[in-house]
Image (cartoon, rainbow, N blue to C red; front, top):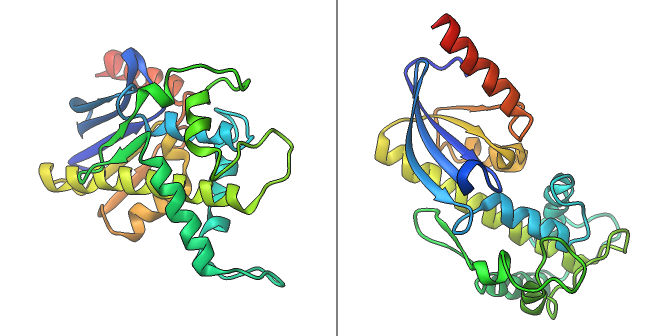
Length: 239
């Protein structure tokens, strides 16, 4: 990062070594120490995003960026496209309905901790033919947002689901960052892990001025492990 002094390091992914999903570290020079750990079976932001990516008919672990790009089209307050007729009251009602369904399988606490319902999100039957989307999740969502098959037309309601998902991601991680910045009195923040590839989220962190300085690891997903291994080897050899 090039930061001088201490920096908070957030690593947010679907799951990492030992089943960790989101971890918080304190970096100081070349030293890094663990502060907090959130388990994948309790609070995985990346896993939630991947599951809804597949629900929306995109490739999991590959096309999450499509969902991020789709999300603004579900914002009821956005400017309509040329020739588009948007009923904001109806759109907002639909968003509220989707958010209410989300509460059946995930809930964001005040400090940003995202509590998942593993029975719906991680386990259950998978007769619909998706790898990560359980039949229980389809039962919870399908009457307000039907699951989309790959290549099928995108409906307006699909963009609303993407918008709600993106909002929950932003609210949760920003809550964790804000809470950590206040608790550890450190306003230099580093983001890594697959979730850190969400540029909309990163922009919000800067926009809300949660950190004085922000560094996002460019190879934030699994590809970054090779860079990390090289840096660790360099530290051990060169000191």
